[in-house]
Length: 228
Image (cartoon, rainbow, N blue to C red):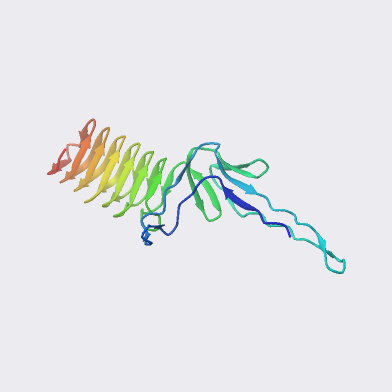
């Protein structure tokens, strides 16, 4: 019979849907592994096509039909395309690689529709990140691009090579570090550090705010304790 086709990844992909194994043998459920940065036109995987097989015969000389191999099962998702007669999967844009089941795609933005929790795991990537919910305690985002959080950062960490926006606020133990500007609703016993501007729309309560340019609050805002 013919040999089945297969997919040979050309880049290392270390995301694990459960968690990452520590050297001690335990599992860190916060960490699912970093996303893999991909450049436009980069080879993601080689697709080995199945073979047809070679017909044979039994001991009496009767012909035996061979069965062809099966094609490798996968889906070329957004940001990818097949080339070289279907034997190469390449990226069509800069982004971060994600493999989910049979789907292989390159994300220009990593989107989390809910909270950043155990189901998602901490995020480390080269591009922007958008979290519709909250960043829960013990989880972090390390992004090369802008980060937008629709809820709160609760004792979590966000580090960005661009700007960071937290629509609601940063709670006790939360840490935000950005190369660009930081915009938050409030900071309560939190740490904010920006190489650019920091804008707080409501209050900074017992928080440390460090910036390379200016710290701004509206007239209705307030600063109670902490350090600016």
